[in-house]
Length: 633
Image 1 (cartoon, helix red, strand yellow):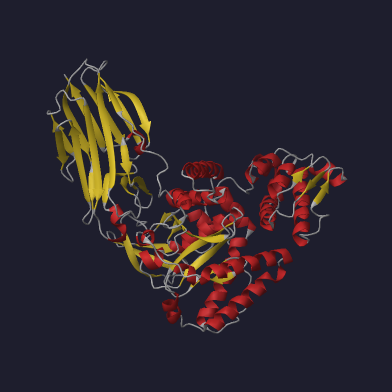
Image 2 (cartoon, one colour):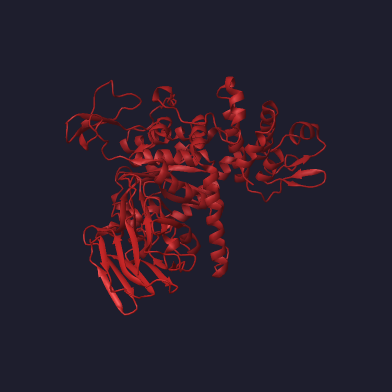
């Protein structure tokens, strides 16, 4: 049961009935948040006229009451005191998003009734920036002369953009939520089964965390694109940064426009650096600033507490609050990495000084989460005194939260206190941090694919000689991630997924580079150990005798990366030299079992894992970079 299902149920009602029910539900929740210990607000009598006539007859209402924690008895719906207020806040936010969707344009009510399965204003993104209304911030009155402290107040002020309900509605509409929730549920079940099998106890992981990981992967692989220099608008060639534009005709919706000069025709192509997230939802490209802004918005659109994090050494990312773990999780959408805060200092070798987190509710100094050298960092913090910074943060938070309910302010204070206790503890990096991988409990690392949950598939290709005239071919497309089993030019069988038809594999995965439009198999991200993948082919029956084996196998290496590919059959062993794509031999005459194994190793620096690759292809390729052909006599 989810809010998405609740929205679908609400869509089954007459629109006015649904709107009135949502209004009353919001009022019920707000009354409890304002008076959290008053039992009269936590008890709803079923025979109450409002409940019996305006709420319960509306499809989806009872589901909403259960989602926020109400329990049903014969005469009442009651909300136990043990239910956290954060659950009510989450419910209220979801209802407000739904309500806002029907207030933006009353003239389109009929259209919205057709799409009531999700609380969105429109089902597709606008095709032109001219149709987008940029979000306008209220004016800021400068309080601090110190340049750094003024920067803090400016960015905190700009964080109000994440709270704009209309922008959140647009963002949520772009998320394939049903698909991601299904993947998240499957991931959660896998974790729970693994924890149970290995006696790990309760992994303390909720659907929020697994959905967050699916959102990170979708955002990087499918939604957003990285741009160093745009392709030339004139000829499509490569370009390089030249200078910043001062042309007022280009400075529309932004005050920063880069000009990139084409290396072929020398034409200038503008690249605007947008910060308005209404526009970024349209363009869906940029560098870390655009990535972090948009990802933070998407998290807020799902009702999560999320904040924009800025490092003074020029990088930005997101933090999302985990309700189950009661702590903030570091999320870098550019890297598709979650909960690895020490990677910048330990893996990227950054010199941390100030790391500030901004949301529509609070601003916090989170530097200490991202360093394991507190004393050294403290010596580098010279832009203001520590007392000045603390005083500014307190005043900015207090001013922003003046209009909040007492229950919300109390919740934020308790959460801040817990975070401050966490930040006081100086963490030590482990091997995982040095390799750019995530530390934490075994169950938590499992979510990020660092623990294999099952034994290798042990798939063996059965080459049946009964109905073969001359040849059998097994081939693999990296682009489609599909194997084909072909008998005399007739496709008899297909197998999806690279690992589903391998007899063994370790420390490898299929990498899709949306930025460079490439796909390949390589070592697990950050892995310094060897990666390996192995295929086995057994010849069955005596109707034909194997004569010749032909292998086409592509690989590429960078730096000092190495790919070693070997073919085994009984007492035979051959090695396909690195870079050689074609191998053929008739020495397999009469053999019954053949194994092909490829080992990936070597490479330099933090990206060493990526310096040995199998089957690298363009995403538009129709080729099969791996094929094994068996010729019979």
